[in-house]
Amino acid sequence: MTLRTVVGRLWLVILLLSTFGLFAATCLWGGKDVRKDSRMASVFRGAPAAESRRQNPFGGEAKAVLAGKKLFRRHCASCHGENAEGHGKAPPLRSGALREVPDGILFWFLRKGKLRSGMPSWSGLPPQQRWQIVSFLKSLR
Image 1 (cartoon, helix red, strand yellow):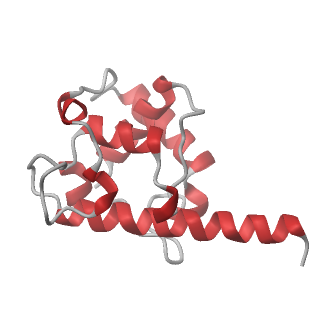
Image 2 (spheres, rainbow, N blue to C red):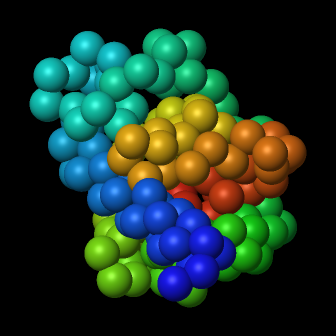
């Protein structure tokens, strides 16, 4: 087994674990301050309170949803599936619970990541692209 194969598999495991954590967290979140909600999975627990109030500058824009879909397929679909239906052990992101998570928290999570849970940081993506991914995730039914 080559080093490239090992690194690729490790990366996949990390992504799968993080997405499971994201899914579990969204199922438990009930609209409270995610930093203080004891039921909240650790995925969002570190989010600053101000992030809950942060608004998506592209919220509700059809062009942002389409751009976010393309970005999702490029960066996220390998774990979550082409249409966010879940893939392997990665959870689907079409749950109603995910739509309840504030946009700012999702944006924060994309930027910060949580490697212990398997979610990489996407801080290398420009903020506009992260907001577009959030727009796409919020549009899922």
